[in-house]
Image 1 (cartoon, helix red, strand yellow):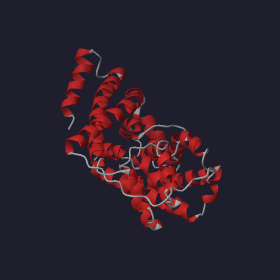
Image 2 (tube, one colour):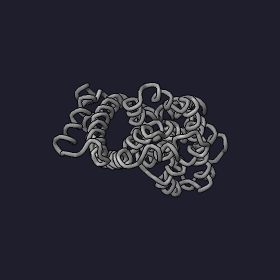
Image 3 (cartoon, one colour):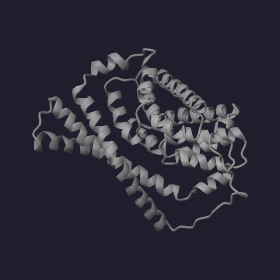
Image 4 (cartoon, one colour):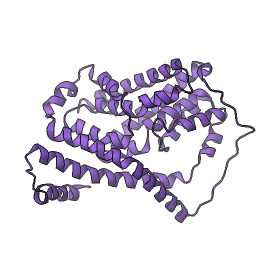
Length: 322
């Protein structure tokens, strides 16, 4: 798909700029130029397509639909809704509160809070573009399992008393708001949204690609393979622990995942690292601390962290280290 750009970026790096293709700087610069535009093209295409489809849905309709659903079916629906929402772990919190105001059970709201950053459509589409449909499909299946089961378990623990702020229920019943737009209006809205999102995240993508380029050019494959490429039991938990203090969205982390796996890190270990960054982050914990008791936050992080560990090990087992 991008073979034309790989050749052209090679000419730019080695012929126009004049870097040695066998040098570390040459390899790093070629990777940076090639991957930056490749990911930008993927991002704009993916965000526009998903944003266009999203114009046929609205939050009120989802809240109406989730209201009154039984817990497990509600967990499934909330997790699926998380796929089509462009939220990172922090920006999903306002809608999380909105769900609570709509009297949607806590476990269902947590399924959404887990799924929105974890099963983000950008992450899924970029996994498909970079690693193929099998990896993307397996990630969707396991990621949804974490959000569904995690939310269901939290819902069964009767933790409502650990919500620190009063959540005032909305008056009356929610009504379904119908919005009629032409295809041209939907396309314009999707394009404006795409530009807005792209302007917010492109710098993080470039930072992620820059770090990936440094690893690609300067970190020996043997180093990655020795410390994180084998089937050592501690590789996945270490990746999760390293990921939690960081904060980024999927588009910023994906270039690192591409490089780490190309250098020998097992796919499950790399994805555990990404999932910890996107679904569990210290900024998210700091925001949640204002509205949830630390005990509930610890339970939330513990359940999701355990789910990510299981996903990492399952990925490594299913793919057989390949």
